Image (tube, rainbow, N blue to C red):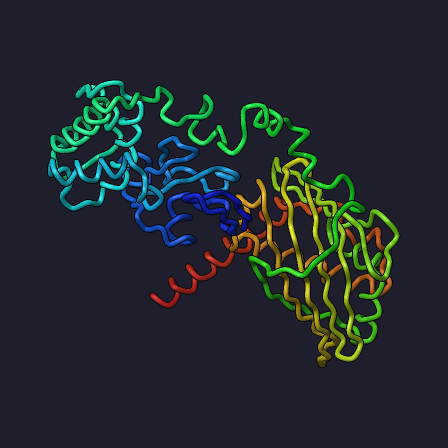
Length: 401
């Protein structure tokens, strides 16, 4: 999930959403602004058109996270707008709507034409509205409505606005109207965006509680008594040595641990530098680890929480795990829940094996991996799934015969 801060209909909002959420779904589902309609979902029909920093934009093909800091105006935000009020009256007078599904997007685009066009040129109006499709009217009434509003406003000596509210050259929304051009140039410098991420783990702020976006539950068994396992969990360096890709970057302290974890999935490599706080409860042999980290290369950040509880069994100790995390930035786009769940299962299996060897006295060099290789885990996962499919196919075939 990503936290998105922007202005919608002159109201500042800050809401979390998936990185893949488009702006149309964002305003409809998160803000209940259902006047923005969704038609083709390919940016063709224009039903979803809104104003992004004063410029008409297709909200169905615009990611909400790309609108960080922008001003968004939906059809609801134009209730008191003078131009839209005139257009609504003209649409009614010229019979420019029937079912009304395309009308919100049509009004947003028509408003832009009324602001920009110096005169009521039918050809330019039809070209300007060519991105808004209507299956009912045949467009004649719509064109007449727009023409009448342009003519009435020019007759009242209301001059056209050549830029139509556009603040800067570039794609819709690129102006970020709350900033002037100089501010925008400053914000686009690579150094500026990198300063948002801490240079080192020691600069990571206080580690606060949070609500994870995704929670995974796993368990494994090691053939050792709970007291021995719990004592090892108190040795942070030993635990880090059992976790593939993990390392400590500073001597651990009771109140704070600083470290890093390296991940590689194909061409994507990330090193999350961060810190964590550790809580332990000897009474019920449980604990909690809460951490935060950043990868400067992908400008991604994560928050994580691991809760564990040791349960004695006839085979030794069962370790119950609850793993919660929130990932933002570029890497969040490849974090499919099912893939993450399967990879986490394989990672925990490696961790359990390393932990068992450590408890049995195996040297760390023989027990640990130097890097979390996601591709190796993924190929192992695919092999296991193919074997499962083949097994099911064979059993079905035997049953049929």
